[in-house]
Amino acid sequence: MNDLYYNIIIIVLVLVIFLAYILIAYFYSSYNNYKDDVDDNFEKTKNYINSTVSKIDNNIRSSINENEVKIKNTSNLINDIDSKVNRFDLKHKDNYNDVSSSIKTTNIDLSKLNTRLTSNDVNLNKFDTNLKQFIQYKSSGTTINDAIYNYNFGVSTNLSMDLLRNVNAVSGMTVETDNLTNNNFKLCDKNVPNKNCMEMNINNNGLNIFPTPSTTSTPNNTNNIYIYDKPKTKIIAKFDLENRGIYLGGDGENAGMFIIDGDVYVKKINLLNGDYASVKKPYDKSKKGQTQSFNTYQVGLDDINNQTLITGIYVINRGTEASPINIIIINFKSSNDIPIGTTITFNIPELSNTEINQSIPSSSVETSPTITSSVSLDTDNIKITTTSLIQKDTNIRIKLSSTLFTIDGDKTETTITNIINHRL
Image 1 (cartoon, rainbow, N blue to C red):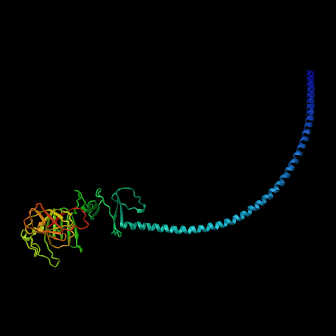
Image 2 (image 1 turned 60 degrees about the vertical axis):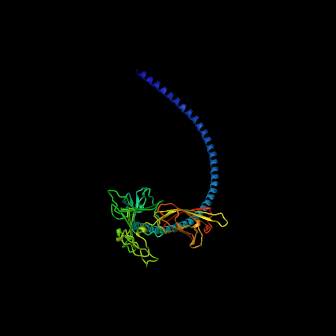
């Protein structure tokens, strides 16, 4: 049994030795082959390295040469840049000095400007304060107390302004009014809230003066317009707007003349004869209704208050003869009876006669009805003296034909018509 183990071990050892030999032979053969390859590769590598190193050396030398040139050029460029930098530095210093000087000047100007702004702010506040001493602004009746220069005025139609001091319009002042929109000039007292006011406006009809219309809650007690004398002590005219009265020379029935609701009242009449030194006797109120003599004026008061009004028309027809006979036809009537012996004067401005009181023959006069005793020509006046009573509102026709009537040269019409309207 032991021999068997021994033999097996011998066999295994032989196999191991054989395998070891084979492996050693394989490794040796591989080593020789690898060594040859390595030697060959090493030789090739050596040759490549030598060749490459030579090229690199040449390239390095070439680069060094190029770099030396570039370095020289760069040095020159650096020198040029340095020169420019030096010049820029000098210019920068100059600019810096200029800027520094400008900044100092600007700071001085800013300081002055700041002083001016402060002064302007003070002045603006003073101006606003002073402005409010003269003008007060309102919006919808509320006083604006803000600084006016800070207040943003809107487009509200309720803006208004109060003048708090006397105002002189040295170059005149125009107030435009419009009675259609109640845009009137209004003068009021200080009675608050119920102001008493008088209004004025201008329209196509003229100047209107009237008190502001009253309401039950806000009555207007301004009912009169007074005009005073220069010392402001006596009333020389009064307009009573409530009772439709006008008083001249005083207030109330002490006035020399007054009108109430269309009726005229005269307190005293002085008739003058040429100048103020010869005043005629005044009318005596206690003798009302009686005929009174006013010195040389032998007329009654009723005659003075009821002067006869003569109205009518006259026509002038030019004659065609060599010595033209011009014809004047007068048609008139009177507001009162005209007694016998009254001289009626008709002014005919178209006449240019120079004769004074030249009689016209009765054969040249036609009347209907017959009322004349004599007719005369006094320059441009025709005077007729009555021979009978002329009743009021009676139409009278007078035809006058004469060569004495000389028509003014600038009147070229064949027929001239004009109106008669005067008092006897």
